[in-house]
Length: 281
Image (cartoon, rainbow, N blue to C red; front, top):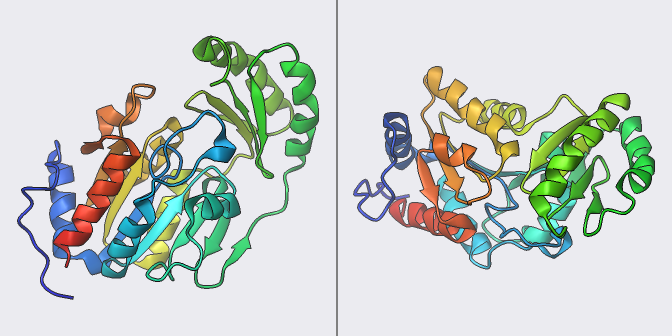
């Protein structure tokens, strides 16, 4: 690898001192850096039907250009790992031989090196809420469920008033989750009932420790990414530089307010990844 290009005029300027430190460290020491990314809304545009979501067409080429120049790349998603791999087109891609996909907020893991998924046993509460949801959601036009195997998601994006349906369901779904030992993870017009004990922050910190990385970039778009933002803040407080990227949207403002860099949705995130790869040539 040649010397990194530290002239950053075509890279976005981070708005915080910590973010500027993180970008400088990433450009100076890419071989010590972990690049971690959410999937839906970050690498893949949000669509009405989650089964139709696919990675931005330039996502895999950008990751392929960047991955050989950094310590590790991971996708951390609430989806099952195998689904994210399939929808992302990540399998058997030259240049992504060491990609890791952490599904179900890190409870599952797919390694490109083996092509295998490792996963925990099913939580019994998931089957219980799966059976209860049809009755609870009866008569709610446009509200649909998504069976994620280790979790169940309730989507309101197709309802006549998606936000009103989302707000109306938060309490009853929260009560249902508590009765069966689960938690509710809110997102962009979705409420996911899943087992406790794992989130994207825990997953990111474990992956950083595993790889021995000394620089981290995390990009996300939704409320489920806030724990990963918190993990980067913790790492920065301990001396590990980090860069927080928000895949911007009008639906969620919390990440935008905490981010060092705001990209224009998945297209902007992919462009940022490609520009980073170009600077590390």
